[in-house]
Length: 304
Image (cartoon, rainbow, N blue to C red; front, side, top):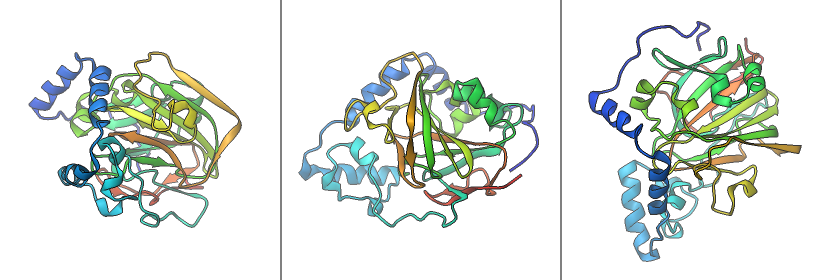
């Protein structure tokens, strides 16, 4: 993790075809198209065809079906398979309470200090904690703290777990765009994460306050909340990409208690998680592109 401010340098740019694709997406109805993809992903698959259909999907995306909680015949749709749970015991969490574990399987995008309210997105591109969280008081709490961005590709497990134990007093749904969040988009789209639709909550626990921001993306764009199931609108529902335009905040009194490793949210087809930590938390050294597994150590209390 670096303590240097975000550099003012020319950004790296993705390949020309990606720039053209992203410009085109900027003019398309991303939410409506993503909801259409969602309906396809929700198409019922006859039980006898599930091993072939879902097996082909797993091979195409690189999903390890041996880690899935259930056999392929028990997932009636691509979406239900995509948000599969893991078999018990295939991930481990740190023994020490003051160490945060990764909330997801993924790949490190960026990490570092939050200087003057600014987070690094990619070379030459940054964004503000205020824009990401849509709350000035919350954003101020994390100034001079640390952040970690984790990208989930289609092959990854797509449920999000609590990086630490604690209490959730507030959560927020912020509508927005649904650009892709892959490497070309991160390189090309200014303020990508604050522009995209997102669901976030804050956890008060042994590492102070930790913000967990789930950023939606193109192709479905649904995020469900396990800490507030009623918010989803049904057992297999979701909070985001409903075509709404107003920020919705929920406050919990008493706060919702969560244990480290407990399920928080789920992506119904992939995206990115951004974690924000208050000052006094040290990130475990991780480089851009490093793989992380659910529960692996990412931060600890008492750091500079």
